[in-house]
Length: 92
Length: 377
Image 1 (cartoon, one colour):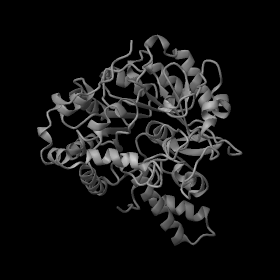
Image 2: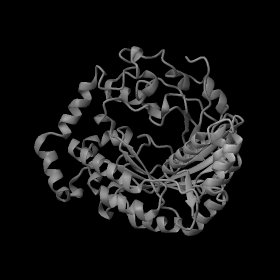
Image 3: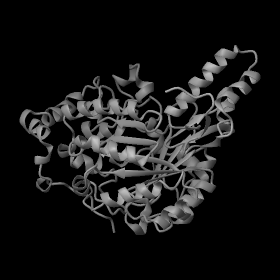
Image 4: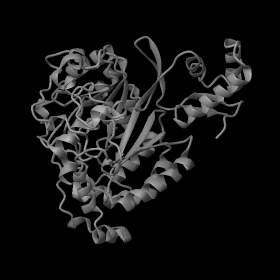
């Protein structure tokens, strides 16, 4: 499964953002995922409006010291993982 | 004792022991609580607030059948407004379309529907009730809503061969997650163990099929397989470690580190009517009892895996060895492992097991002498 750059990720059914001890978390059926730094920047943009390409673009600016290609690969890998974990759906 | 105690993350709210089903592996205790002992709406709602304040993220409403509580919609609303993520673990039986709509409006995050089989006759036999058709109707109603959906198939010797049909139900439902949860042997399941434990051949076939299904459903439905731990090499990290992640509140308000904990003799449980949740979590005798590693014996004490599986399940150690401090006897390193092997040998003994596998339909359900759980007063 590969992520389409033009698709728009959004949180899957049963997933929403929450907070625990001032730490942002992604709440999912039976699980929760701690979000910080880049993972929070990515997931907070998964709202059905941003395309994958736009998320990559914004994070490349945000983490401009990192190698842009590496940022892209990391984001694609993370989005794919979240889809497998059923935390994200991709609207096309 | 660890120096710092982490927050509890999940609150399992056993709202009632009442249930229209009589499943032969029910995880409720053999001594069921009656309706008159159940906590009120107000007390539960206070517990949800205390839980959220103590750092709990998720409330799992279970039972018995949580829908047997007439105030279930209020409980969902109050848990959600306290800040918790709310799951309903249900048979779906006492549900109609209006109640489902009300639950979703009240903020229900996640609906977990239990199945006793894929075929109607199997499901009805296991649950001692006619239930399957209604569950399939509930799945259709759920398609109207965008809430989390998990199907939970409790599997064992009598239904594990229906796996393909179960997967067809999953695929049609569009559920985000399916759990194939092998029966774990406590309470009613322990009483019916000889009739429920699958054979090794059944288990191998099941694992193969699930690997294939995992690929097929990837990105659509996440598959969770809970192994029958008698067949495992190492024990399960039961409840994520004693007093590390989860608290269970019984219908009458006792706070348990694990639903089976009352099998451990001498363990006293604090009640949410008398003490705050945080105080119970941090200081009560029951939660302290097996926290950390001080209680461990060899081979756990010096084992590399002790931080992974925490020595396995204390209740299983008690049930099978008579010593709650022993290494979980399902562990291949446990001195008492031969007890589990003897049970497996009996299950896999030549002709009985083989004959069942060749033609599972020949097992006539009405010849099985099940011990069904009753409904409490």
